Image (cartoon, rainbow, N blue to C red; front, top):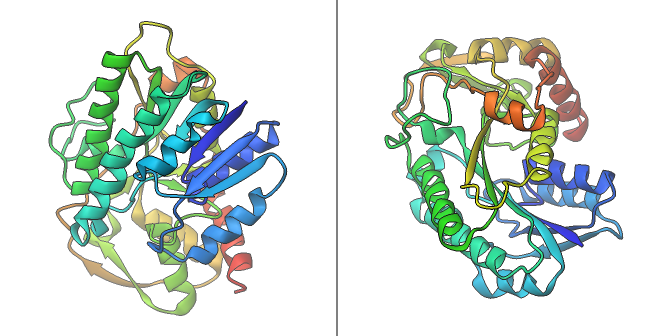
Length: 320
């Protein structure tokens, strides 16, 4: 038996695969190793996963032939985390988002249909689906029909496609709406990472609206605990598709994030104040009652604990 993890060389995928291997699972990892950010970081993550229980396949989840070839493997669970990420990049290359996040979702669900031993299909959605909602905290019962970016629209499309596949084919599915995940081995395009790089280089960082926007920053170890907890609890037969927020249930200003980075890195930031883009929302905050009731999920890593851990890794990895 094996667990298929897509996006295995990515941030959340790497940590999820590593946790599964640590508990004795056999893992098949898929990643296309695209150059959206430095592939050396992705290769370094994969090097830590290497071992007899881990098999890596370089492929695009939108590649029907490559993915459906996996139907011959004894896969019991799919954790589909591969996606084209990034809100602002979706305004530069919208086609990449439709390919990875929409076609990729369909291809992976077709693979799921072809797996005779499938017990659960878990996939990554995003807090971005809440779009222009203003009522906080964001709840799974909120309307999500006003996306603020193409990225958000493609992640919502993935949820709707999954709903159709559960209705038509009774696939046991859970979608996870991630809220601003951060931590060691993170994504260089995310604010906390790019801020750290700029601070160490003495370069200015752009703070939207004076750093007042707030995010539900969620530490990677807490996220992985939620992913595995959800994966281990598939919906009952006949139960509809499940959508769960997975966040910290605590919102912090970007200003506070920067202050913690300055303290952890031992350097002051050069700040440039700019207007918040239309694609960025003012605040995110996760209602996590549903995932907590299902799995006992209880995030325990405060930002003032998680950011020093990230900074220590950053300095070691980059040799600063």
